[in-house]
Length: 82
Image (cartoon, rainbow, N blue to C red; front, side):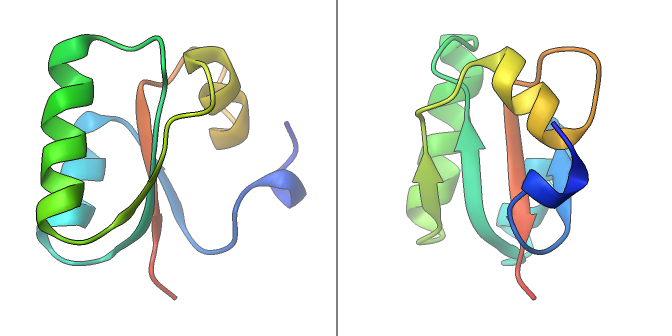
């Protein structure tokens, strides 16, 4: 997927950077792949809920990877507040 199809704002891919955005109250929205590890899904969704961050669980890991512009699957990613 091309950069013009990414959500607005800075997009970060991966568990650690997504959790950092959430904990620092920098995440506007978090995308969680429906086919990712249950451990990752539960941890990210709990953190997002605690921080009152919008979540989206509609995409697969392959779709999130493409959205982030990487050639591999991505379990979670986040859009940074503008």
